[in-house]
Picture 1: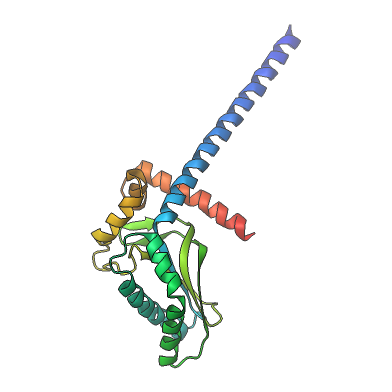
Picture 2 (picture 1 turned 90 degrees about the horizontal axis):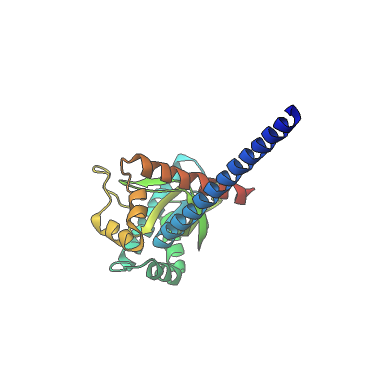
Length: 221
């Protein structure tokens, strides 16, 4: 009798472990699918700017910001009235050489002779906050500008919709930029990036961060 009971108990333990494993697998797959869907929608709605300084010296970092300001000023002129990311990317692609020349001219005007490379591609980004909007880490389309050896600190922002010039004093993203993002995102997705004080929304944001960071880490290794 004891032998039979032991066999039954062992089977129950095995079944319990199997059920728990399957439940864990199901939850993981659901979470992964959710993260992929939200991340894709977020990535599809923005075009980012990535400027990399020659080095971390004070002079090179200051130069990076001057290049950034001149590139953004030109991009804002070009993108006035643009209502989609596709349009913004097309404009950026058509003006790659112009961006490179603006960066080169800025560098020369400030007494440096660094080279500049400009590319448009899909790159990994860390989590960044722009006023009252936060974008989780992940892969985003971006205009990348490398100055000189490009071994210094990065600078990131969103070129479209324009989140680069957030009012520092208020920390609020312009309503026009939010409206552009709202058109391409669901209500829940927009809530996720809007820094809402909601425990469920915060958890989902952290979930996206976790899976995207794992993906970035895996890709780099």
